Amino acid sequence: MSASNPATAPAPPARPRLSRTRIDLTLARLEGLFGLIFAVLSIPVLNDSVHTLKPEWAWCVAIGVFGSMAVAAVCSLLGRGIRLSTGVFAVLFVVILLLWPFAVRDTDAAIGTQPWLWYIVTVAIAAAGISFPIVWAGVYTLTVPVVYAVLRILPAGGQAPWEIAVLDAFYALVLGAFIVIVVTALRAAASRVDDAQATATGRYAEAAKQHAAEQERTRVDTVIHDRVLSTLLAASRAASDADRALAVQMAEQALVALQSADAETAGGRLQPLGALAERCRALADTLAADIRFTAEGDLRALVPERVAEGFYSATVQAMVNSIRHAGDGDGDGDGDSESDGEAGPAVHRTLTVHGWGDAGFSVVVTDDGAGFEPDAVPADRLGLRISIRERVGSVGGIAEIRSAPGSGTSVLLEWPGGDQDGRFA
Image (tube, rainbow, N blue to C red; front, side, top):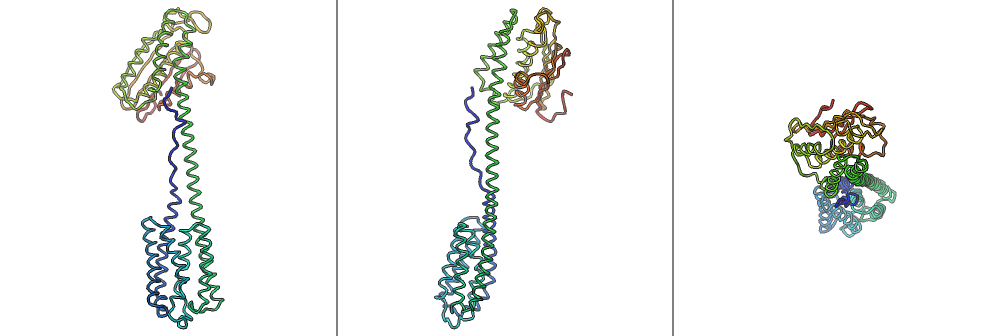
């Protein structure tokens, strides 16, 4: 009956991994900030050892190290090219470390002088942790301290005792490993958060699909029950010409409803409340029962078509239930009672539409007939649960059924267009 199936609607696009992106950006900016700080702190050491380096090498090393660190810092601030810039700095640091012996002018003059690259070893390891996969970051963390220890023992690296070289390498290894572990842990935590959010979003989308499918099923069940089953029941129990005329009219309405079922859920257009009131007036005149119709209040407000259709269908069901179950339906005392097959007293019925302007409206169906116990109605009876309560609730309305055996029935349907403080109190 519907042209589209909500259960097969396309899945929403994948949710961006915001937590992981933010963590990566924060780590890159911290790396850029502290990298520049450590680089500045190494400048005095560079000045003290510049006499041991060849001029051309000294300039190349300084420009390469400081330039690549500055580029990485700028990229981290811009949020673009972070992995590439930090990866270039990490690789360039290893290349300079390996070529350091060729940069020394006089190995004798370099003995006792510590290479100033020592002050940015941990910065390079942090850059590798940010730009490289975890396995390669681990290899980098182990390799760089070893290369530095070998360089430290060589005359070009100051020819330090092996104990000092191992201690420096161990210090760089521990601090670098700690940085890589922290980076990895933060990324893993952020990824878990993103996965949890993606799972929650997927479950919500699935629940929304199921809810939409259930609403579609309820709508179809409601149309069938309101129109088709009610018509068949009325036809099967028609004992007089008036009852048969009612069944024919209900059948005509059922055909129209089935042909235009999709229009009931279009809901985007608006119509005056007065149009709903006129439909209810025509309904009261059409049904084979004495029904007093009243329209009160401001009926000029506009309401969505799906709201009007939902309330009208619920009103039809409420009136049909009253005619079928309340007792004598023609008001002259010669109708048939469903319970004992004998004529019962006349039943008075009213149908009232009351408009509150922009504050909403209400539809009230009452009779002083046999009444019933609403809580005792079986769950498989769709008239009250689906055709009235859920039909009105699906369009944002409120349905209340008040009845008791021997005390008549009142069906109160309310659509609050604004804040309400209880119109039926």
